[in-house]
Amino acid sequence: LIAMGPYGTQQVEILNCLLRLCSSKGDLWHAVQERQGIQLLISFLGGVSSEKQQECALCLLSIISQEIDESKWALTAAGGIPPLVHILHVGSIKAKEYSAIILKELCNHSGDILSCVRKSGAVPALIWMLKNTDLRGQEVAARMLKHLVSNSDTSTILELNAMLAEDAPPSKEYTTDILSYFLSISPLADILFDGSPVNESFHLLITMLSSFKEEAQKQAACVFAKLLKDR
Image (tube, rainbow, N blue to C red):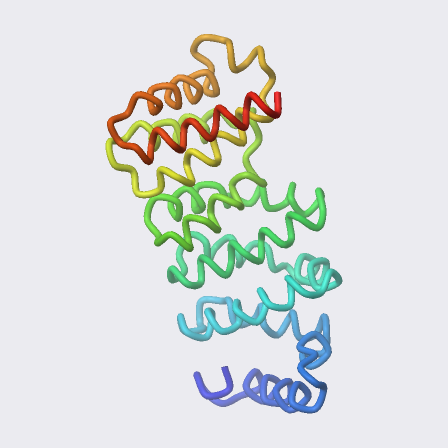
């Protein structure tokens, strides 16, 4: 971040953060001066920053958000959710992954923050990640979707069903995992109601049991074993 971009106020502040980090035994939260540093890092997420600058700032934010609870409220209060969701839509693959990790940490911390992220339009971007990124990106997207999507979100469940029904979906394992989660929290009446989204999920997983692909059979069997055990 210091070396990239035109030399200015941001670079000076980041350099001071680095100097404090070197003298604070690796305490990143205090090195960036807590809430002030959160605002500084968020400023790198805007359109004028390069892709690499965004990735570096997101990497630092992901470290802080996973270590410091106070940073989660600081990030939310500083208006961090909209740019994080925007990066889920338009950022590089690495930036999307960092952004999803940060948002997951925020959602884990507070139901109010979860509600804000849910309303911010993150779900379509996470579905895209599930379809188009590597295994690491798919895993991050799947974890986040389980937080954001409720069992009443029929359009998203139907889209996941369509992905599972494809011959060779790129993320069958994680799509199966998400639908398994919905089956675990949905009312039994919804699962048994013919034509409901989760009923369709249930039947798709039954179909997987008779698949000629051993891995698909194994995934479906694990879902039903867990479902029978838990319910």
